[in-house]
Length: 145
Image 1: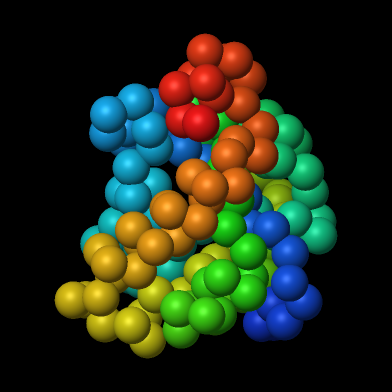
Image 2 (image 1 turned 90 degrees about the vertical axis):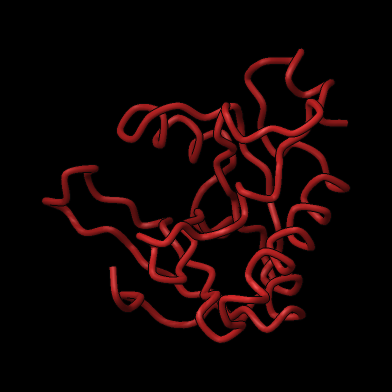
């Protein structure tokens, strides 16, 4: 993944992020969930809320890619407020994970390596204040409130 495949997202909407079961701190999702890994080259995968629901995003992710405790959301406006543009990045048919017209990216490349952790913490804080967008395990949802 080097460049987003689609146009920039300008309209405010939720951006759904899968929460990994192992990335919790004190019973709450940690900021690692909102931080791109080195292999991501500064681009964090999300699902665009204008093209899917949190539940469908979860179901698609867990059917192809692996484990998720649920879905939390940040908004395009929150990302933009931290200098992070968002882009549609639909996954085409023929990809090993199948087509996904809702796939999008939050672009951390402009904030620089030193600010990524701090910015991820701010996004995580916003998502935690909002609460779960979708959580199939009610006990996990209660732990994050």
